[in-house]
Length: 239
Image (cartoon, rainbow, N blue to C red; front, side, top):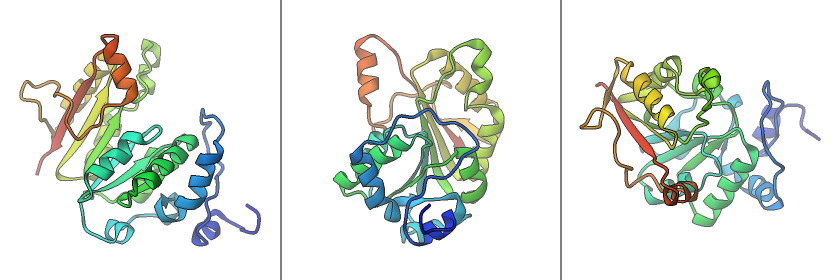
């Protein structure tokens, strides 16, 4: 940490510091471009657990509604959504550091200012930094499906986690999920349907067409050419 004695001291000085974590992240090395983007953009767009419970009006300097994305990958669709909706604010969470660097590069190129990022575990961010009933939307797109049956318990979308997300949503707030794995889509539908505070926005009671605001990823486009399906779900919290 060089001249800084703690992560808090470094953050106060506007410096990005890689922290020791209690889990192993599967990631490659940062490219020079990603590292440079983190150095330039983190003081403006970066958030850290050490900041504690966030006041969104202070973070964004406005009172616009906030969407939280968990696991934004390389961040291209998140940046596109933020660029297309300047009247909203977006927070992204990603443990994959090259993804954070790539997202910051894209945000810089797009001139996006209504976006903030965490390079931390989503559960810790939700517990320590996000106030109850503060989010307009939570979105999770293409999480790891853990397709082997013995690994299903590792899936992110579980009743306890969804209940925790509901606490963070404002009344009428929305959870938007998407997956290209049909078995996981069915699992998501079952879990969300089992949460009493949520109601399905699908008129058919299952899945919705891809909303226009969710950009189609290159991965999704490649899958479509091979006949792979994608399932979107939107559930709304009661008033």
